[in-house]
Image (tube, rainbow, N blue to C red; front, top):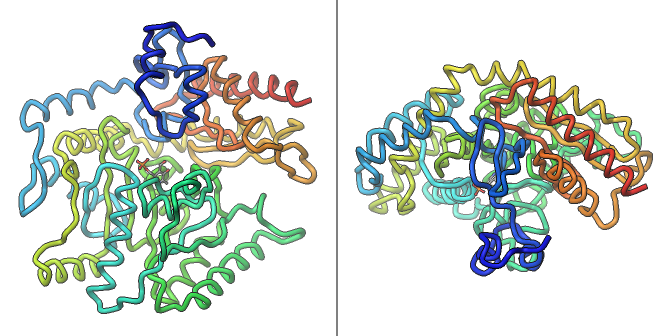
Length: 455
Ligand code: PLP
């Protein structure tokens, strides 16, 4: 592509350093500039329309043109555009939202802290765990376990939890006290002849061995997404979470559920914790909390954690943590309206109703010579492309074929995200069956082109 001089693309190249982008490639090719949104579609500045099959970054649950969210933001902006929650102050939509979130989430979670992003929420959760154990006079109990293929964000602590080489390479990460255990991906990590039951037994046993080798008194918490999203939409076997939680309980280790992707209906229940049977002590939320129309995230904690944090804040003079924009009244008003719409439009039932169209539709591609596994639940799914179906051998180098697929689909008007050679789909939850069929047609055409390209 030739970039026209003085165009928006050339000015982008001149001035803008993009996240998660090969900067030299952007210099050569320029960006796609998205100009507006319409339902599940976005339209670029050249007038091309794309079905957004990843809801942006797994986040615009209500699509790209929900007028009620615009109105909620405008009304709040006019009334009180900013206030904070420091030093015993707050704004009224924040109080309403706090009450609503605590009511919606599992009963053991009794208080909520607000931040602006998933990364900040997870950093806050870690600080909360450390603060809690200091309050309980357990200064050694500080290590956090996360999992291979887990994605928890990019701030310094969150990026240390995120066990993807591309997040840590070049950044002097991870920090100390973060350790990793295996991912529940049966297709990739089960041993020859191992049953699903034996696989989850082994993961629980490996976790227990890790805790014992580190010293149980040094391990504070385990963080996990109910299903791993950016790691490749890894749906755990049914027996996985009960076994993992039994080990955590045995060693008095807190469970942090990162619901940043799974939260608010995505997996066909309100939370991934409901779908997969997690009973977390801490839960982090973001993305679909406001359908991503405003940056806001939340950290829910159980009463024992709150009580220890509250006592320590009294002892030290304050809970010394908070963001200028955390508990922002405009973001809170947008989130509140989002949650109202989820209820009114029965978003969980909607996901249960249309989800099978996506899951069954993608499973039709299992026969392709380059499809290794199709997986998913609710309205989140992935198709893993492989060089050899029998041996499950990946393409070399990993990611090239996935990128080709994504570019091919984009040229046909559907934006998917390739996670290496795994193609992810996570469309806005308002998607109709007819729109799912358009998504699937785009997938089929890109797959045919990719099969021909690798042949
Ligand atoms: N946790 C999960 C499960 C995520 O998928 C993400 C982002 O994709 C994050 C945390 C980080 O969120 P943010 O990009 O808002 O910092």
